[in-house]
Length: 256
Image 1 (spheres, rainbow, N blue to C red):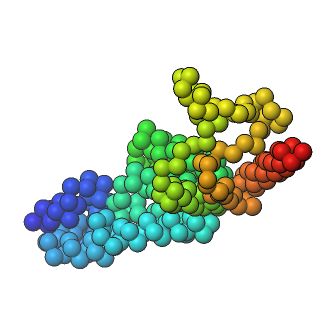
Image 2: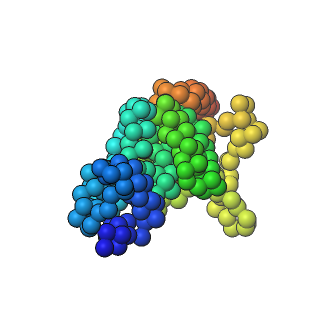
Image 3: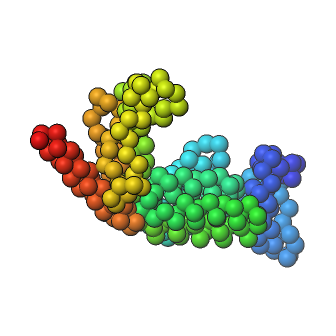
């Protein structure tokens, strides 16, 4: 009866079953040195006393992944390692954790460290190749990398801002100068007219407007002054300076 109860508690999860079996084997022998025998009630009491509280379909599952995610976001690597270990001890599928680490890499690290996504994907791939328990070390390495990486949600915020603008502006057409003109009619309508091939321009930058006509220029991506995004910010500021110079030169030419 107790063995049937143990299988029922595992609910088809072989890893969780093995974890419970390991905990039961670790229970000290009885007074005479013999292994203890449990009925169903004794088994439930022993497992509940020794196994971490974790229900993969209920609140414990979401509480622990939230704790892991927020510990990483807060750059508390040791706390993140603890919650990672708690999830494994509770029988969580390491693949689920790997997916969440990939999400964290793009949501909370982003371009502040472009290697974060590479590390997360490599760790997931390593786990798939090695399995448990060896592959779990790759996930540990990933947790440490993400916890110690510079953080930025600029790309995440840019995606949201661009999506809102796309919904609000409806079906505005691209400006004609960046449209291809495969037919004479399209050329007569002005498709492609005035397009400047950036590689032929100074600094390989034309400064032309690529937003729809009638839509003011928007700034969706605002990189942080952290990690690699500091370098990206310098590039964007440089291109904006060139754009303003080209616009001023064009306005001066039109005025003359």
